[in-house]
Length: 352
Image 1 (tube, rainbow, N blue to C red):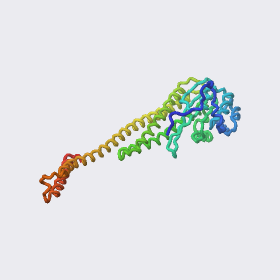
Image 2 (image 1 turned 120 degrees about the horizontal axis):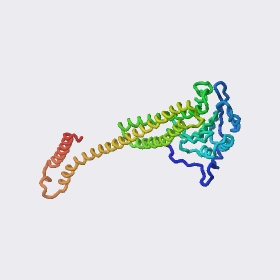
Image 3 (image 1 turned 135 degrees about the vertical axis):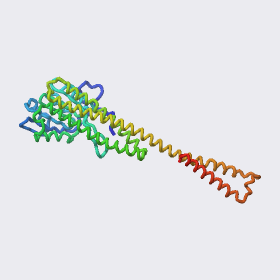
Image 4 (image 1 turned 45 degrees about the vertical axis):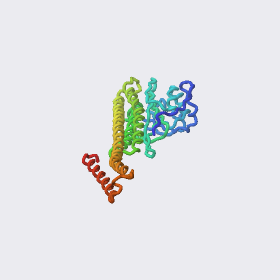
């Protein structure tokens, strides 16, 4: 289940921009670098972040991807690329609301990468930090993953426009890939919602309530993480920074449209879940009413029979029926006739 509130490693009382000491035990980051233009491509993995420093002023586009939060590597990036300490704090501590900050020479973007774990049936989130410079993009994520591998393949095979465009277009491609991945997560939850909708109609059992609660929490979480992203994309479109070319804003508008579609889908799912929940409560109530109706019918039938049994169970000395030879059988017959008569009456009234 998605956790709404997460503990951060940030210690109270530290100066702004200070990286928490609790993060210093993280394993070394895996750093990959791609330096390319329309004709040439250089790709390599580097053991130390210092190996990327010679590419800072490269005339080509440089993509530095860091998998794993290594505070020492982040600090070296600060020193060499001139990144503000507050940005480094946001990168290392994570848990940031999606946001866009323009520092003039570079733009910092924080957003959530969301994936679906098939084994645990849970949504997994991870902060992705992007630093867009004039000729470079630095992408930093906590865990390793294959989400960006299709982008690398496109660069290797020189497919599409990525090799002919600038660093701002690469940042767009990364954003577009992350947003498109939201569709996969939402589709998984959509399939579950459709299945629950059928189950509620056919057999509203108690376990459905827990699943509905789980889905509702997921939709709230997704909305919370994706809703601010539209502000980020819109800010990039309206941004007058020299780092984002006018021709790239057309593609950013497409990402904005995709983000709105994702948000609309989440809102629709929330409404559907609320409707299913109402139907579930109605189904449970109807089942309870059916049970109560059956019990009420049995009680209504046995009330007069109990009354008759109580009368003949008093055994007063001068009760005339006590001496009848066939009194017992007459009493049973009378009880049976009353019961059958009441059942016939209930059926005529269409109560059963």
